[in-house]
Image (cartoon, rainbow, N blue to C red; front, side, top):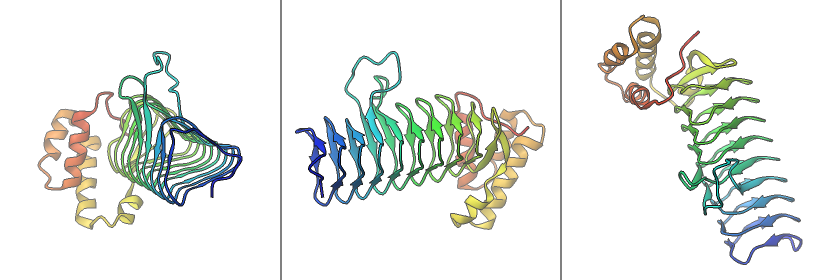
Length: 254
């Protein structure tokens, strides 16, 4: 049901079985797919919202990037199906650099969380209350960002990471790690997350071995990476590829 007090731009495409609450504004260049529910007092523009999303009250999606170089270039937000956005979530559309912000499927953004322009968020990612990521940040699948945490622009967070509450992330975080602290450091591996994803014990042991070589062996990083490349495990290969592609340097244990 679309409330008669909602304001919908004539360019918007609203599929069947969409619910929109009172005083919500659906602006230009919006697509809302079937089964999505949007609460009251929200604002959505320049966005494509997937199937069966739940968008709460007072949410802002597709507002201009908070980037002084932005000159009204046409850009957009893409949100995958099944994603939940709770009260006061803000997601900015892309800047001229990539023209898009992308949020994956089945994500959960708790109240007051924020994804800035040009970010890439994978599937099944959880942002706890007030978690925020800066422009161009990349977040891998199945990652959890604790409440009040913040991620510096251009950082990359690997798949299956858990970022502790109140952490400030300024360097890249390897896949399957735990990190915490002001200027976050690694604090071991996200074993609970790996087991929840039904990763086999051999794979978990291989990741543990790789972690020890990387951070406890006192090898230079390039030598440690060469050493863990000998481990026959797709998840360890994911870690080595992540490190090789890191542009900001990776966080380490304290």
